[in-house]
Image (tube, rainbow, N blue to C red):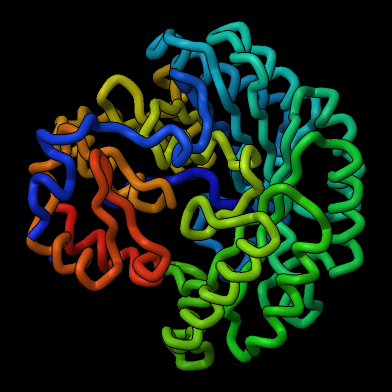
Length: 406
């Protein structure tokens, strides 16, 4: 389904260039996406899908049946453990990810939202997002999900082309997807949807037409991902056999640049490498990850960062349930992070953002010689108090991160 849950996979910049010991550190007021002074995010993972898409490496599982009552009670119990471990609130965002959380009963969603409010309280204007498949069956639940407290939905349209949907293993067609989008726009305050591009054989003209159509629907947020062949997926198996080829990197770069141009002209510039929004419509939950704010994760495979520790739940649903019955929580790991580890993670996540990352306290983790070379090449911009990747640099973001983060 969607891509909100983020796991961390943890090349002569002068001090004056980075603003070290010079200008005050921090972001200029007009360059920073507005957020509350303090944030706390909650991620809830629903691991089940109707079928497994061939490109998907997320923690999703197909089961013949799911006991909704059992899973509601189990998630509530896992939530209690996090509430005991981290008492500071209020929550500024909740994200139901998966898997396919639109398969959850609205009553389950309502119970989890109510419990979260009891545990931490809600900040004014809290963002509560749920990922949804754009099927007619799940769209029929949208009104009930909104009544349960969901105010933002992220739809996994993935394509506006019938042949591409079949290639991607999606169960819906274009008409059904667009009908679900229309329902979502009537029901929810905020709507985003995902598209995957740079598919094998997809021409520049075809993607341009699809993107223009996507922009015409008027949503305030789009998540636009290039197809990647992830280990362990069916696409990876096909690639290993030579029956599936990833796009040529130069061709993919051309499509990326086209995407930036068209979304920017339409008023939805990229605020992160793959995410585009009108000002004020950015995903506040994902910003908590990218800005390295504390967030809690419950449910199978969920990650969290709280109190200087990294948390990870058991991935397989049955193992998570067993751990919960045995220990009162679904934790597989709770690992203390050194200040250096936290700094590296903050750099790796923050440099994904257009606004960049504040560097105070992180100077010793940056390879200054490599950063200076990349700045000279126009791929990095070093400004007083912060470092950011330029738009051309986003094309080679992973290589830049490997070069500069020590």
